[in-house]
Image 1 (cartoon, helix red, strand yellow):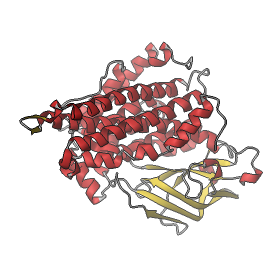
Image 2 (cartoon, rainbow, N blue to C red):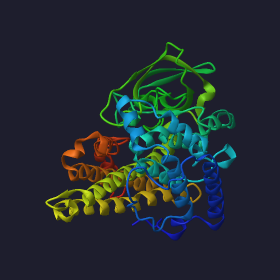
Image 3 (cartoon, rainbow, N blue to C red):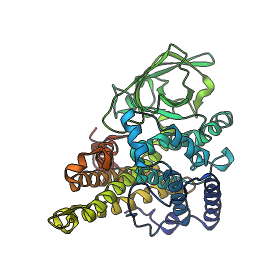
Image 4 (cartoon, rainbow, N blue to C red):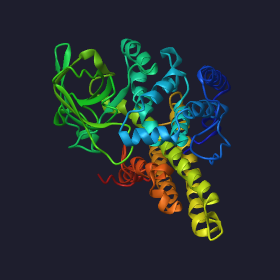
Length: 448
């Protein structure tokens, strides 16, 4: 077991805790001043299921504040967005207006100065409110994709980009996945060729979330041919670029998909697309290592989103099982209904512990040199895997507990079930996580 599990990881320092509380209270006060609806938490369930014992006061404060925003967007709003494939702009604007898009960015950049632990709680709360993956994905990239930029970006990049993202003026997407590389990120073929004070980008990205509404993209592209790179992990570079749709060299095609239809996913085509050389983030050729700072954060956030989805579905199923009368008694009386739901709850609670351990490890690793990237990677990947599996089980059983009504749109569980497949597939498959953990944690030979 990793030696990094210690009291200093489970709790912030006193000074940090004081700062975190002050920031969270300020954000809550701002939200209260604008709130039109004083309801406490969630438009989804009659009661909250997740045990909040052990969370910090700051995390619980974040949960309360974000819940207040989410309560203004009922399930009917999210059903309509899903059915019409309509971007939830109003929700994104509400989250931005109260300052939450900068939750994990330094206060010096206009952010809240909190960590991925608090950001994960925010993403879980959004999904759990009934918004599901669609609500979470509306703000997802704005939180994790800015992590490598905040750490490695120049002062000019930070000054010109971060405030616009935090305010909601600009939305961000992450351009990594390619159709011919898939999970083999080191084999990306999109190129960025230096030409004077510009780079010329050519290639294709796929499954780029929010590409249709984003103004900025964090782009990973090849600046050195794979065969000429000193190491396989070198030769890729990270850029923060504008998406100028007036240029013929940039085009997109929206992908029709099974779930989360409110949030667009796209194929993005670059054909000699010119970007300024100053768009480079960090050193040329070090983009893969830099991007990992965003990837581990993304795994934590997505784990939180999966948890929220699972708890929402399970709460709805438990409520239905208490109220639905068949054979003159609640169906929850039957162990055939109750036991699968109880099992799903236990798996969610276990995945919750793994998720927030990984998030705390990520945060602590910023200042504690004894915490390795490998430790963070194993924890974040494990959390994403466990939360995705727990969410899938909870959502499937929620549909089955409803019987025929589980297939009806009005009960929402079918929407959450369609969305719960995403954390199992993206941003990395279950099988690749098992490969990674087997290699890094168990010392097994690399199998890919």
